[in-house]
Length: 173
Image 1: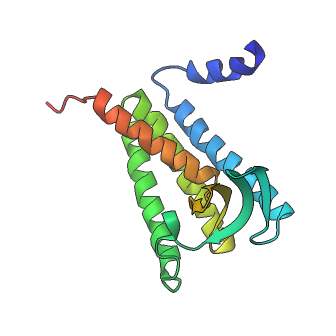
Image 2 (image 1 turned 180 degrees about the horizontal axis):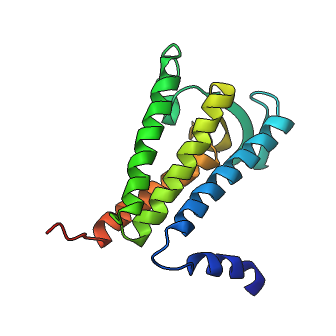
């Protein structure tokens, strides 16, 4: 167990004033997201499902031209460029906030996760014209919209930013 935790501990103890650990986290999120998407694209046909946990969790291959919950998925194509631009603007803001020390440590980790997740989905939009989703959680007749690792990083990052907003109060004086 110690050998598994050692890289994580090294990662967490990189010099406190350095932002390198946040950029490494963002890069790791992008790499993990793209590796998992490549694996699913290589092994699944569109809409094929593999039951992993009966009655709760499947792997599937679905495409989303919209945003979360397929928002604007049927908008006619302009949404691709809108979401690309939005991702760049948000990531630029978050990267600037990390560099300017606008967040506490939880906020910086959250921002890095959002940046990595957003760029993972940007890569999909540029390469495929849509986002590759493959994780499907459901219960009986209720289905949560399919998502991917990038979406997971974005959601966890958003939670960390909210937590940080309660914990970290920057002096504005």
